Image 1 (tube, rainbow, N blue to C red):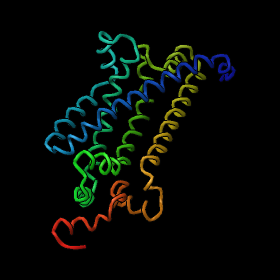
Image 2 (image 1 turned 120 degrees about the horizontal axis):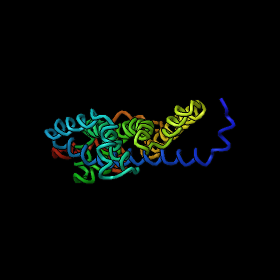
Image 3 (image 1 turned 90 degrees about the vertical axis):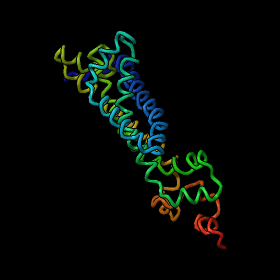
Image 4 (image 1 turned 60 degrees about the horizontal axis):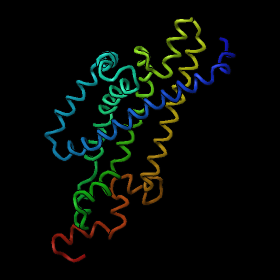
Length: 243
């Protein structure tokens, strides 16, 4: 292995790394933006979830290369040609987590929030989504890592970020390029995964430990519900009894 190749090609390596990160992250973010409202609708209207999930699975079964080729006539050899299929694949991963996360919110928490005067939208934003956030972020982590890895497949049509190092290294019988591309993809995936773990900790501070964190982890409370009077008094008030 001629590792001296690296210092002389730092500009190329940096450019390919940025392109790989951009395509992979944008695909996962757009997939999340689509999956959240679709997952909310599927969790609210249960009859909607089976056909939506079936359609998503059909899309996931399509070969990525076939989608790349089919899009070339419309988007050309651009990043969008790779982003669209990877977004669809991310959607398939994230959507079930959004639905599962929302369905895992305990009914007594919903009832307590409603009794405290939370409307449907406020309850969704301040109670249900925060409690579902760990499950949603778990799916986003898988989707992001997968997208960063699958970007390299786009090199088969000339848009693949670090995948260029794989094909060029193979054509030249120069394994150093292949190893560098492989290592950088792993580093990118780990870095994005770590950022999402930190984002989860910031979005769910009640899960960091302590009595309140333990209660929230058990699904008994959320930041919005904790900010109001104790939820146990709410069901009694609904029945007209005194605390």
